[in-house]
Image (spheres, helix red, strand yellow):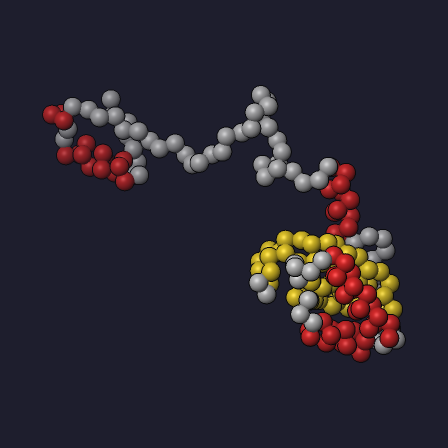
Length: 171
């Protein structure tokens, strides 16, 4: 029988227990149609890169399936009908991955580090105080000089400096 890797996303507003119930439902569909599920991984709720059907987060699950095409097609049909599933993808593979998937390995790595860091990476300067945020480059300052000594060329340079062009500091 062909081997498949199937990933699907569930709505953000259902609980983890409800989503695990969905996983069991789809496993049952596969086994009733002559297939088997080699591995199932629940990755938990994750933030999406963009909204999918008005959802910013989704529950993720991975299933390694060994089943005929008809069983996978029936499972996909049921997922298309369900309002709790917002997206799914099935890939045919030559062999299943042994051990945990890359997402599960990534979670283990984060646990060893102590979880997520701050927005700035959790790093602080030598003194231990938080870094100030850069709001942009410093604006050039133009010193005023006597109005009697200005020429028309100096006025055009001052106009450029005010507009953000090449600013020359005059003394």
